[in-house]
Length: 212
Image (tube, rainbow, N blue to C red; front, side, top):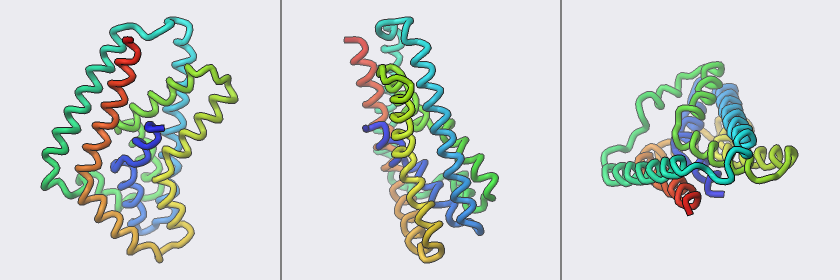
């Protein structure tokens, strides 16, 4: 699903995962960050699944104002993504607050991983779309659990892969992680612009589809 793609390739989820592996205790810090990230995805998706279940009997289709809100939000995200793309030159570093991740302790890394799922608009939006879609899909509770688990596993994959790779290989991956971090920092603005446009397109599609 494109929802999974957006969450997994978002530079604001992958770059922190690479940065926490540059700390003085990379293994426990990386695992703690992954644990917080997974917990956040699970909680957010579950909340929206339950919200969809609770609202399923209220409307055969969403009210018009909700659909128009999606249309406006989708257009705004697309416009912002285009703006970020046009102004990407010169933005070749991660935000200063993100670079501070290299000094995180394991406990703080877990809290940061959890917090990022809530404060990052692309993650929150995609968990909302996925949770509402799962909850309204008439899958039954076992089907919702299985589908939700698959969603979370794939959405978290690009955070989990570098963390588990480092747990297995250790310092042998230091140079590869450094190269990956440098590449993602140089392309951070372009990747974020693409993610914003993709999210905007999905939200716009859902809004227009609900109006027709």
